[in-house]
Length: 95
Image (tube, rainbow, N blue to C red; front, side, top):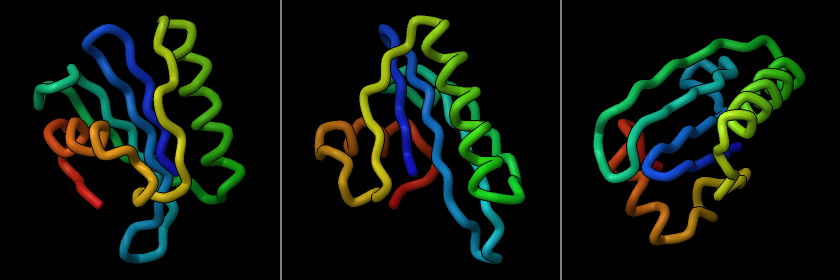
């Protein structure tokens, strides 16, 4: 699952995925749109329920800060081309 919020020139992204060892991770990425400024944090979770709770906490925080959701998808192949191009410039990982 991938969710992206934006506010003015800032973005915040949450990516729930499995690593190469099969561990479930929640990756959070933030920064300024169109730049490589920002940060990344990986959190190892024990279950999909724990990931869902963390994602819901992030959603609540970002919405309280004035961010609005611009993308929510369960497949990296379903990201619109224009947003995908922006994200490839910003993010350290690609699909």
